[in-house]
Structure formats: structure tokens, C-alpha cells
Amino acid sequence: MASIDKQLKELNKIQDLQQRSQWMNILHPLGKLLLSVFYIIITVSFGKYDLVPLIIMSIYPIFGFILGELSFKDGLYRMRLILPLVLLVGIFNPFFDKNILFYIGGTAAETGAAVQGGFAVTGGMVSMVTLMLKGFYSALSAYILIATTSIDDICYALRCLHMPKMIVIVIMLIYRYFGVMGAEAERIITAYKLRAPSQKGIHYKAWGTLVGQWLLRSMDRAEDVYESMLLRGFKGDFFTSKKSYGLLDILYVIIWTMILVLIRSRVII
Amino acid sequence: MHTGIHGEILRIENLSFTYEDNNHVLDDINLVAHDGESIGIIGANGIGKSTLMKLLVGLLLDYQGTIEVAGHPVNKKNLNHVREHIGYVFQDSDSQLFLSTIEDDVAFGPRNYGLSEEEVKEKVDAALAKVHISDLKNKHIYKLSGGEKKLAAIATILAMEPDIIIMDEPSIALDPRNRKNLISILNDIHSLKLITSHDLDFIMDTCERTVLLDDGRIIANGKTSEILSNKALLEDHGLELPLRLQK
Image (cartoon, rainbow over all chains, first blue to last red):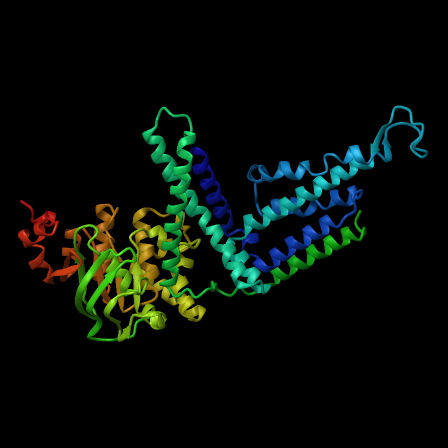
């Protein structure tokens, strides 16, 4: 129960972040979405041994957190489920790629053969770190986008990109139903716990019934929400207010695009 | 959207309805309502009040008889026309409010009817002002209290300026102050209002006409003051006198 309640509160906190009147939140969502996607593409396009430019690529998430006034600690906490997966990618690389790239310390780094006292850094080690960084940065940039842009704005940006409206509506409704299903799950578990105070957790025999109840009740609630939409003229498309571009929106995208392109083309190293 | 129709705006003739599982809920219902009226629909649990309301807005369609909203028969072909004239405030406000902020939610209806952004803004501001929550415009839905959610749900309907407003148990879970506030707001709304409620004091405060349903039929249809003071009638049909009339 506490866990579901906590998750719902986390969802609400992210919505609070999205609704701030901070300048990054006000930027046009299309620019932010395109920039995030562009950053991820550029990040993953680096070669497996391109450690130095990848380290420089950290400039985008660093500035994103600073300019967006986001807490790095909270960001890491909210990504705690995905980060282990991201960091585990490539963990076996050191076992497969034992090619020595360079030595740290030692005296004969040029030949690479007989080095005294140096630490041999293999290709596997470097590629493991670059893979981790790529995943980490991608997750951070996605978080920056989510923390500064509401789901309605992201969907608006997707519609601007001519994403089929059916897909956009499905994304929007799935997001809405997280809250609905979470609230229903919390009610059911609270009702169970109040009548089974000495029980630790939920008895396995009750799981089937509770999950069934949860689905049925969530479906009922979802149907009510859908009916409410239909009764207010919903015909399969979400209309939102048109957002106009300002100079800041354009500059933000152009400056970051130039910086990322310069890093990718090794002008900035 | 408000049409400015005066006079008869809702006509129900010989309405009967049976659910797919052969549960016969409504039988030979006849009702005519006019612009500006406020009608309380009362009755014990499970006698078909909610079913009747869902039939009026076309959420249930396989009925026998006639339902006409602002001159449009309620059928699959006319649903869009019918729903332009009729607004439904759900019992559970959480079902009504599904967007991030009050402003977005209230704007949802007007935008769907193709109004320009300026018109949408005007209607949103006017609807919020009517229910006295203009200051909550940018507030997140999940941060609202029960009373604020109810007012926001009503604002979502008022923004569409419907000719008919249906309210399912609007006073449920409201504290006395919010309840009083809601009564005053409803009395200032001049559309036809159909209010279902078990809170008979609330019906007394908001409706000049009352329809008593039981066993799928209309048992009484008349002045609220007469029906709600008839102890024998109410008790025969599973209700009690409003609290203020009980000694």
C-alpha cells in the first residue's frame, strides 16, 4: 500500500515539475522533443572507443539539470529502475574484447608490449564505459524532457510531427490510466489491509481475486472517463491550444544543435 | 452549446428500457421539461435514476419510446447534436476530470466543438467565475479538495453552455459549506437542470419540481414542496421526509 501510494506521489511530483513556470518548461515542446531525440541519436552514434567526446556530451544533461532547476539526486532516484539496466549493458565487454588500447602509468606505453607497473586498459573496458555513458545520458535527457514538459505538450509536439492521432491518443490515455489504476489499486489494498491487520503483505490466495477486482474496477473507471470525454464532444482527437514559437525557442534549439554537431564532428575536444 | 430555446426542451414519451440481461428498469416514463426549470429526480437505490439520465445523453440507446432533446430525437445518428445541448456532471468528479489542470479540463469541451482559442478562453473564464474558482485555474487536478473537484466538474459542463444540465448526486461527499455554496451556484444557473439525489434537503433547496420514481415508473411528478412533505408517499417508496421536515 505504502509503495503504491509512494508511486502515485512520485507521479504527482513529476506533474508538479512539469507545471512550473520555469523558463525551460515554457519553451516550445516541439523544440524540446526534437532536441532530446537529436541528442540521443548523436550520443549513440559515437564509436565504442570514443570515450573523450562522450564525456564532453555530458554538457547537455548537466546544463539541462542546472537551467531546468532540477534536482540531480531526485532524477537519479526516479530513474532507479532503469539505471541498473542501463549500467549493466556492456558489463561483459571486458571479457570479450581484451585488446589493449593504452596503459595508465608505466613506462613503455608506445610499444604496448613490455610495460612496467602500468595498468592496461582494454578495448572491452572502454566500450563498457562508453555503452554505460550512452545509456545514462539517454535516460537523463529523457528525464529532462519529461520533467520540463507535460504529457499534453509532448503529445502536442508529436501531433506537430504528424504522428498518427491514434498513437498519440493511446499514449495520452495510457498515461492518464496510470493514475486511475494506481488509485484503484491503492483503495483495494487499503480495504484488504484494514481487514487483515495482522497479515504481512497480501496472502497469495487473495492475489487472484484482488487483481481481478482491480482490473474490473479500473475498467469501470476508465469507461466513466471515456464516457465523460464523449459527452463533451470528444471525436477521437485531442485539441490543445496552438503554441507559437518565440525567439528563445528557436535559439535554444539552434545553439544546442550546433554544440552537439561540433562535439560529434570532433571540433570541440 | 446554448441555443436560446425557450419553452419545451426535453420530451420523454412512453420510455421503457430493459438491459441485455433482461433486467427491466424503466417502464412507460413520460416527462416534459422546459427551459430554466430545475427538476429533482428522486427514488430509492436501483430504481433506474442513473439509467434514465444515461438514456437522455445517449450513453444507452436501445430503448423503446421517444426521447427528444432540444427537438432532436436521441438516437445514434443524432448523438452529436444531442450532446451539444446536454451536459452531464458525474457523481464521481474524478471520472469527469482527466486532464492536468482545471483550465485544460474546462477547455476540453469548447475545443472539441471547434471554437477559436479566444472563445475557448472566454468560456473557460466565465465558467470558472460562475462556480467561483477562477483562482484555481492553473491548479493541478490531483491537488483539489472534494468540493473544489465538484465545482471544477460543474465548470467543465458550464463552459459548453448546455441547454440541459444533468447532475448525478451532486451533493455527495460535500461538507456543509461546500454544499451551501453549490446550492447557491446551481440556483444561479438558468439552464434546465435535472438533479438526481438522495439528499432530499438538497432537492428542496434547488428544485421547484420533483419526479418520484419507483419500480421503473413515475409515481409522482409535481411541486417539490408538495411531494417532499408527503410522508406517506415517500415512505411507501423507500424514502423519508427531508431532515428539515422531520420532527
